[in-house]
Image (cartoon, rainbow, N blue to C red):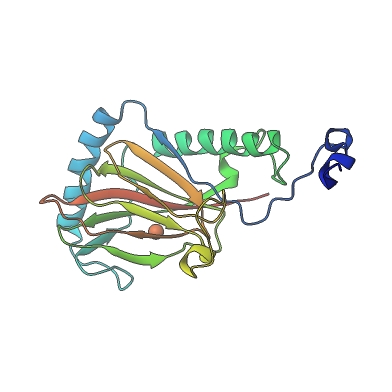
Length: 210
Ligand SMILES: [Fe+2]
């Protein structure tokens, strides 16, 4: 007797469709000429911190925050916009419901920028940057200063089993010159800086005026 499955000709059915729910990615890239840029940034950030040593109430213990645009910020900003245009193009290419950024002028990208200088032993508790479109971090001094972990809500609620392509967690080991981009709703935390040097990065939120 034939097995049940042999009654069906599965290959004759139309291609599958896909609805994008819960799938989230973060993206990374290395900033071109980051060595030269970071050397300048380190000096400017040190001067900034010396001028404005007090931090704000949102900071985690051992973490200094400053608000200033540095000399090379526009170079980094343009690189981020360039990458975001490619990211959106990718999702349009795979049929995801995503708006094109191709012809979007740079002034339609509204950035909120701040600088973090996190001392050895410090960390950043789990949080999101919600109400923005994209968020990102650029590492001026990142190597060995603690991983950043990204989590889905279902993962934190222990609803995700091993083997599924969605809903998992990812950790990234930062290096100098690394740029990470992620949707602002994505939960993340920064693990303890167990090195003897400061973790120094630029963090930003982006709202796109669609
Ligand atoms: Fe964050």
